[in-house]
Image (cartoon, rainbow, N blue to C red; front, side, top):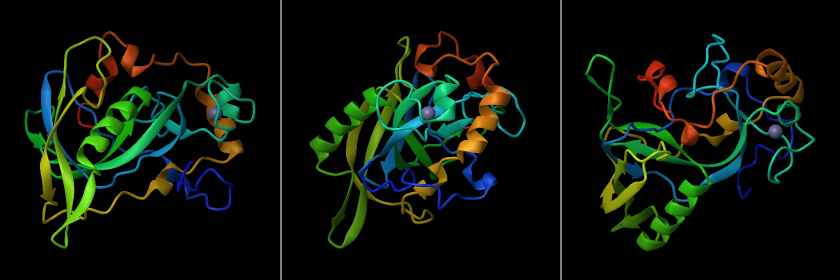
Length: 233
Ligand SMILES: [Zn+2]
């Protein structure tokens, strides 16, 4: 788990509203190109559950309803986490902070989110791709002449079935200083601090039996993405 310190115990649980995932995960539509800049180099890795539901409204959603697994770190479901016992879809992720330099198109066709800081939630295949990119450029963040600079990539998502939501074609375009109006420090990874076992159990009882969306990477149609068009994953 590296320096990701939230799975060691239950002593530092944030208020519920802080622990509920917000709307700042990066995702892109197929055939789209977006420029992103890295704010940190090392992913924070852990297991999480995908309830596929907005905990506030109860409506199905891919961009919300994440809950960090409190079980031990082995493959598959484990027996020391209520969400695992409830067979809520579990996946391994690595989180990095990026700046979306391009933004995205909202439902009204208007531009949204340019220079917005977002979470890059990388699955295992994404992580292997990013590891290779990182080794090619040295480090995603470094200092040049006393100025902190971040690696910029032009990211493209192909139309291929199962193409990753964070794009599958990453082209390094150079190190650049961060946009002046953006705080380039990584997001507070404590937002991924797990719920209490009691809260997780409650969520399993409430949402565990409803039909869960299949994995984003395995879906044929982006049905829920449409609902969440304004909300990057
Ligand atoms: Zn679990």
